[in-house]
Image (tube, rainbow, N blue to C red; front, side):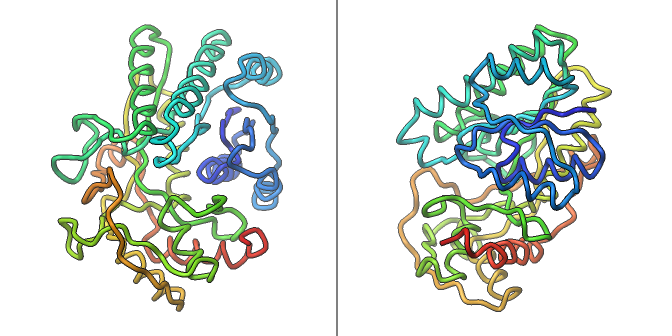
Length: 336
């Protein structure tokens, strides 16, 4: 099978490309390099001894997306491409609505024209808003607290409507919880520019003395230690989940939704203390005011993904912390 991976040089996309190539899928990557680096292509090749075909394009550009389909027989699409910073989406909502919706609509229109019927969408646990109970099941009510999450929810609605209209389609929506970690090789990991929005890249920058301390946003949540609780999943486990979704999609018509998480909630301070212990480093932190929109706790019920996809996370929080720090140590030059 030949798989088109949009955003395939990004954090989750690159790890998924590695897993696909290791399982002998053919991979075509489309990425505009707005939040990724071309050297990731070399790293994917170094890990797998295979070089995916690469197109530097914006997925909003219909003519260029059509060119990919014309030049390659695409069997399925995994769609990662999109802006993803929650805070930025609040200050620049038009940018998020234009890019995330346009790229998806363009892709779906070209797929329809080219009779490509298998689509896997990178969604998010943000579509559950502030859940009334835990753990979170796929049939819970959906709502959002920021424009980024709203783009994911709007795309989910578009896909549901499309599935009703086109009975040939196989659509799998994967709702991610909190991906962290890095590839065991230390070649691939999360390397955002500027001050990181996400917790783990922030922790590793502090551990590497690139930042003086970690800001912990609030210690008065209704959780065991007062800091926010989240379901952290190793990025390699998350990547494996896409292969399980591909297998399901090959023998399925319609639309299905799956949580990809571990089902275990860890607090911010749990993560900090584990990181310090397994890597033998200090992570100074200070408690600051809560961020608007943050919720007390969020973790998945992963039962459906296990029963229907055969997916179960195999890496624990120790692995996530060790692999994240290993990536930063091996890539010091790119983290200045």
